[in-house]
Image (cartoon, rainbow, N blue to C red; front, side, top):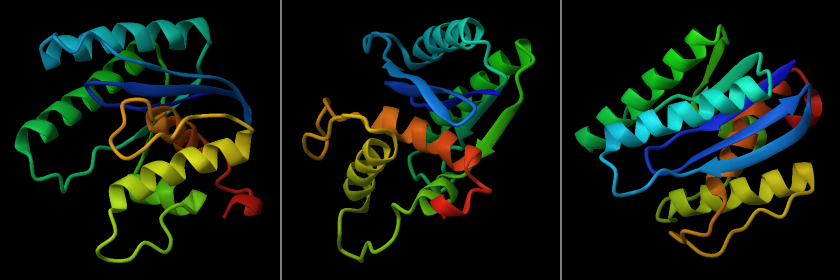
Length: 173
């Protein structure tokens, strides 16, 4: 089974490809930031669809947008992006497995032990990169909080797919 994992945003989308449980490809795509957000979504869908076709993807695991985001514009963009992923996947007859962010983070063990007052978002991004590196022998980069060089988009896509592919594997609980 060829599985694609996607961590989508309108600025940078991380993706990965697994053949069974073996990670075979990972990267991120970023449209020109000068484009209006809807144009960035269209650009990304063209690229993701091409990657899915080339790799003969049979299922896609994608993070579901968090419904508690307070910024209405961000919500609109993320749900539009999610809908576009459903659309391109449907056009290629690829089933989509929605994955809640809290679920995959819990299943891979990166959400434990974060106390109130800690910068949860930055801690989770760093832990995501560290966990993907540990599980797959990668060298994804964590520079510092909010660094544009961090590879958390890629690591999140890997861990999203990993959580689905290893759901029944007790070693990863």
